[in-house]
Length: 292
Length: 130
Image 1: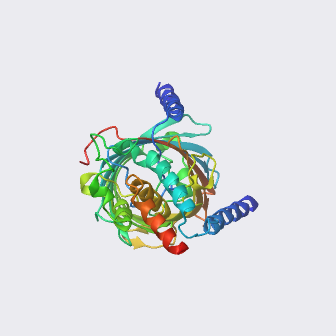
Image 2: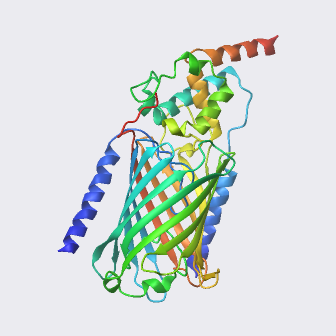
């Protein structure tokens, strides 16, 4: 029965996204990153709902898979953003499964804009070994982790705490961001390290007077680089996997944002490719505080 | 291997395209450019600010009016800086995610409520003509 329930969850998620696609509220101004975080927080009181599927093309005989996360991001106030992710995956020819949840909080440390803006990120995740979102690559994560059947990995519990130091800067229309990641499995495994870095820029910096959908000002292009940095007893690049990912975001006046990014494995331990899609919608001001 | 190489190539082309994106030439602030900026600022306000400040920026229970003297008396530079920093403790988000050019367009639109920006520009055009 859990299979039917998961399929139903997926259908409900898709219907929800289609529904909000038809609505017209405000506009999100999303950066194109899937992995790298910047210092830009969710607007206070706004809720962003996003679906982020990833198509995995592993190597070494591992099966292709489709994983997805439903993301709910809420601006608690100007310097604090909370986010909940619900993850699922389908590996051929096995059945689809819900693989757990992640709850994260981001705190902006400086209240004004600086040349470099630090943000502290704290996350708790309760997932199974079958989770294949691969949102962070840490430690010695590699394509070998996906060789075991998902049915077996489903019984492996992972309760992890993750911290990130996010450094981000805007300069002449460009955004530069770097994240240092430390992840600790509460079962007692050593702390694992990873990184993500991104650079992006809107195609056109100034807006045009007329509303438009398919115009250059609504597109942002970027590039991400991310991978593992070993663990606390062996901080190293040897044996780790790394990815490079061109990425594009399309912000529509209706408030929808579409993103696309093919991550390409760049060393022997990486998966061949991870093709990421994203659709997001922002509901502005659902929990109203006051600026007055 | 071949498809890997072509994906690399596509990625690099995409990235270079971002870097080489053609910007509209930086022209002096003529009345025509000014009105175009004001119109673009109006669009940006509808998209990013109206949910809190109201469709006409007249203020709501959530955020104050942008027609008030305290806003209209601010210098353009100060207003752009305020948009960049926000007032995070009071819930005004930082709009540094918008390119600086767009923050200037927003500022010109907001200042057009009192005609301050247009008056300054007319004065400048008169000076240039003389």
